[in-house]
Length: 214
Image (cartoon, rainbow, N blue to C red):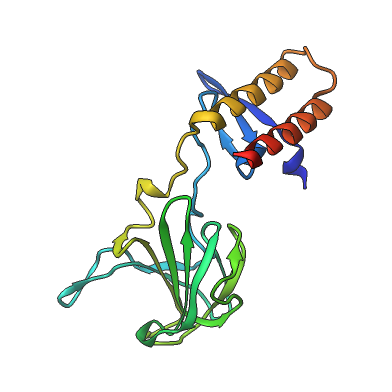
């Protein structure tokens, strides 16, 4: 709840000085003055893990590993790496109990395998960070872990390094809305506004209506 009342942060770091803005129209993500995102679209990892037991691309026989394996105790909560729609939640052969989630903003699909328990079903919408299941030993596995994949169509990408997992910069009307929001916040930093909270609340209400109309 505290973060909902933070509109911006001003940072002084050695010789650098900059401001980041929390933009409520885009899920509370953080942007710089130009509208470039400073928030990851996907969580860095979908669970609290002990170790990466098998990285992306490592060769296994004649094939390369198409995901990342996170070693963790059975029952460790697994979270959706980003907001999206569940397209699969079932037992899937060697993958065991598996959940797949389609993320329409980035046109990517994330997959979570070897679960002991699944808390979602196909068709459910989930938020970033929502618990969708628990680590298990189902399917073909030698120890408790989460096998995690990111796909663009049928092509697997490295969840730890790929730039497609970052939020795109704001553009078009949304960038213009952000600039007007930024102006209100900056006026408060400069001591020009004594009613920051009211002004920002009014701004969000007005522009929510405009966004809904598009």
